[in-house]
Image (cartoon, rainbow, N blue to C red; front, side, top):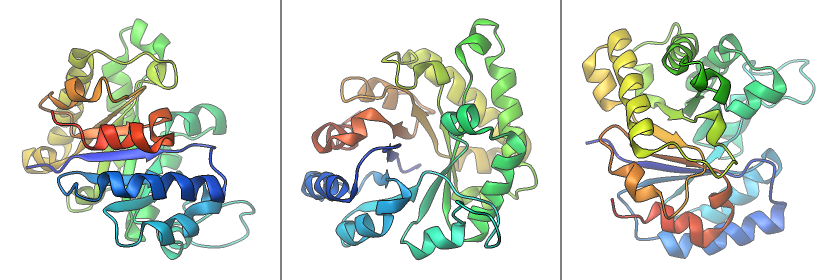
Length: 251
């Protein structure tokens, strides 16, 4: 049985006081939920403060990105080892905004995944097609390319600490959400690609999340799909009540 993951990507929001207000509001709303793995991903500058605030709660801490080198002359970068030092257990890698705005490629995503796993982090590995790619009926080709590129050189054992997040780029921050059937079709395809690469035992255990305008009113339908194991939540994770409603959903 795959344990669902509900992760909140805060993106470029929340100063330290705002972040602490959010997690302190969230904790009592999810304190009794042990059936879902709950993760929040604040900006780098508040990671340590949020870690202190969530101590003893069911909430885990993720970073939104990292660099693949452990240390060195890489001004402005943060290594996986430093994320662990700040209290992180998870890291988001390959988000479409990183690919779109900061030039990330499948090759750099692969380096970051390997470095993060070597540091002991659980990786939330993002893939997804643009609207133009979907309209050109290239969705499956794009997903397979991103999967194979991002996972290149990893063992089946390493995949135990990889969670895949399918995020159709056209649904991120737009208010548009893939239909339940569209999301299920993509998730089923992803699981099949992983199975082809690593075998069915690995693919059956792989948790695959949906991301893209996830809200309290659409989470139940998404989670009712057999291959959807949770959600990577953007805007709705910036409010304690709405994020808790997603975490506490009953599919």
